[in-house]
Structures are given as C-alpha cells and as structure tokens.
Image (tube, rainbow, N blue to C red; front, side, top):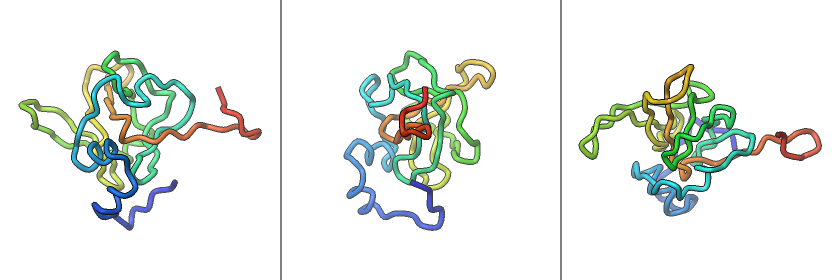
Length: 142
C-alpha cells in the first residue's frame, strides 16, 4: 500500500484498522514483549513496511539476529523514511524511531549493531507489515 503523505488518519480510524497490539505500539508508543512478535524470527526475502501507512522502511537484506527478541535491522531502506527522536522515558535516554510519513512509533535505534553502520534498529513486529518479494511467476524469490 503506497503512503499518502497528505492525509493523517484519526485515532478512531487507526483503532478500527489495527489490531490491539498494533494500535498500542504505533499510536501509544508501546513495546511488544520480546520473542512474541511475528517478525522477530522471520527470514523471508522482502520489504518491511509501516503497518499504518505502507511506507517501505527496512529490507530483509539488512535484518540480523541481535538476540534481543525483536526484529533488528542495520539500516533503513531510506533515511528519509524514518524520524529519530530523543526518548527519555522509563528512566533511560534512548533514540526513538518513528515513521516519517504517519508518525507511527516503530521502536528504537542503538549504537551496538554490526558494521558498517554500527546501528541496531530494534523494531516492534506490531509496527510492521511484510511484503514478500515476488518474481515474475509469483513465487517467492530467495
């Protein structure tokens, strides 16, 4: 689903369209429990999109197992797709990651990731939708 940067949905629209955990994470800056989300141990080839607006956020090519229980990526598809914000909640100083288009909470970014970026984008599965890359015959490309 392509993003529409000119329209922002209402809280009622998000509540109607999202599951309870998707709403909690994306609209209330919640965090799903580790090792419970559908993408933490998901290794198919494709693109991870914002569950709220469809913006393409991360490629499976940059996904890695950080052992933390959440999907982890070394870089976003495009830096312009995300927004980073200082987060001092819960007695910690962290960097929150939001969708640049619809402002959905995605997760956090840390500086303990692999080379070359050294970053670990720790993203809630509930904030993502996976788009399997298809080849011309409709089969998944691997």
